Image (cartoon, rainbow, N blue to C red; front, side, top):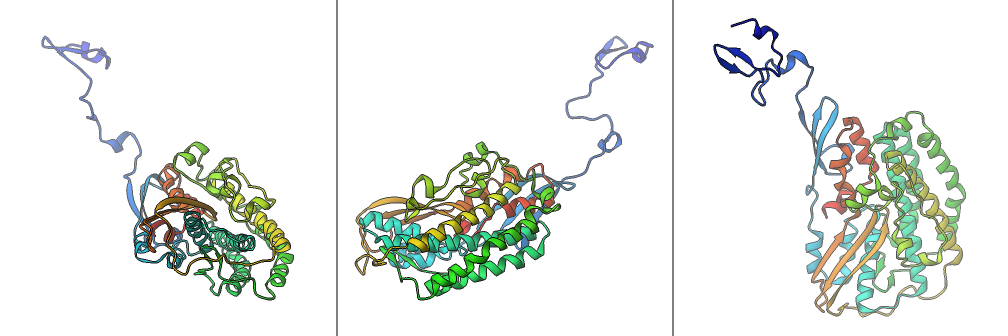
Length: 402
């Protein structure tokens, strides 16, 4: 061996005993153990759920962690599956609403309405004007009960327990009104093909007006507790960012989509019930982060209150139910109808063979599409932010698994 070896650079071969010996190592082979010249950690696989309070239901998310950084995430569903779409095939049309109440069990008025609209379109049923107004009124009350539940649970996700206790005050007041009108606190079965099951009982308008007189003050309390909170802001701003292109690619709708700046709301794009006659705005965000999703939701509460005030002031007289057959037999065909539920575009794709049973029924769950982006949104963030990001999407597992 000559002194040439000492002077050789890594790009120059070594001449030893007449042979050219390259200095480069084979691909993938390191000269020293990994831990000698750099600091690294092994990736850890963590199961988040299915029984975990921050998954908002029976949800399992598989996380790959590098320290506290999420490298990859995968949501696995089906733990709450009850076969609602298949069960509908053995139920008469007027019985399907009881199944759909148990899909999105927080806002059943909207799933009932989507199905009733599908039957009405197939059978060309003319719904009375008063029924349209009552459907819209109950839908917006139900939207607020869902949104305040989101505000409360999202507050807990970010470490604020008092917010949940405050929001239950408003939710209970409105759930009492829903119970008085529909007979149930959650599984309403109120909207039927042709109209609604009953008119507003005596005293409900006065009870609503009492609630409306104080609710703005309550919403200001939410701002003090969360929106302007110096801890809540850093926990949500710039966290779980989803841009508009990604949101549209994943089929997201509702507040998570509008938080990116995309103005898509079924109530405006394809008005149904009495929405065409109401004056309301569609709140939008710009950053597409957890904070914007929260702000859009709270702004939607104020818009729903604006609509409720218009509805109780202008509800028309007349029947609340059209004359429909006791046994519904829509003609053969298929139809898709959609409503703007608290979670986004909730659609019903119904196929009829002319009998009194649905041939096929599929529920387009907005929460399912919103959850699909979780694999993309969690990667690169912290595990603590995974809880906040998931909570900001406002998912309901009963609707997702169905």
